[in-house]
Amino acid sequence: MAGHLDCDRSSLLNYEFPLPIFYQGHTTGSTNSAWSQPRTTLHYWTPPDIATAFRQYWDGTVTVNDKSHPVACRAVIDWTITTIRQEPVATIEADVRRIFELGISSAHRIAISNDHNQQLPSDPHSTIRPYQNVVFGEPDYLLRNPYTNQVTGICEAKSPWNIGPSEIDDVITG
Image 1 (spheres, rainbow, N blue to C red):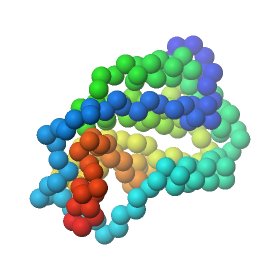
Image 2 (image 1 turned 90 degrees about the vertical axis):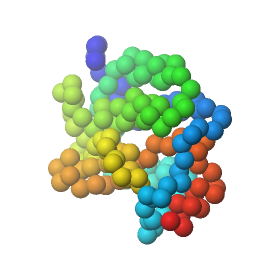
Image 3 (image 1 turned 60 degrees about the horizontal axis):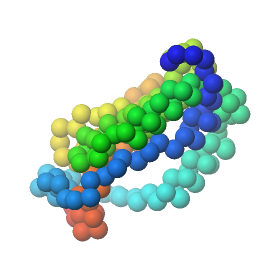
Image 4 (image 1 turned 180 degrees about the horizontal axis):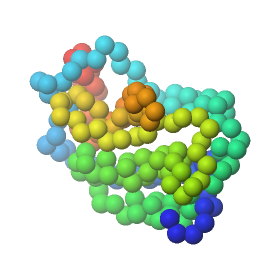
């Protein structure tokens, strides 16, 4: 990053990265597969669920010093947002993954790293790593504790025009 760090963790994590512009038709992809793996539990996280969990963590765990410590250059983040807005229409999952990695995943990595000798957060954070799934039903990304390698979460990048209520029901029923 060129220049000085003038964006603190709080500001960085408040940036709203643009969503992909999705293709409006149907693609040849499918969520129906003979190789799908039934899940023993499935929890649907609504945006309010995610916002509540984040707010509880942010307000209850993250220190004022961690929130206010400079970690990035605003010019770099602004360039990233401009670049994402110029991305072509997302027609396949790889397009969605590229936008996720350019925006959200990159900002998360900046917030938890000390790439430019910025102070690390006071609590350990999981890293977001692409997972080279080789079996249907495996996640696209793993969140892993960098010290124990314990998986703390998973992320999926999906082409939303391939998934509707009947496909969700198919996944739930196995």
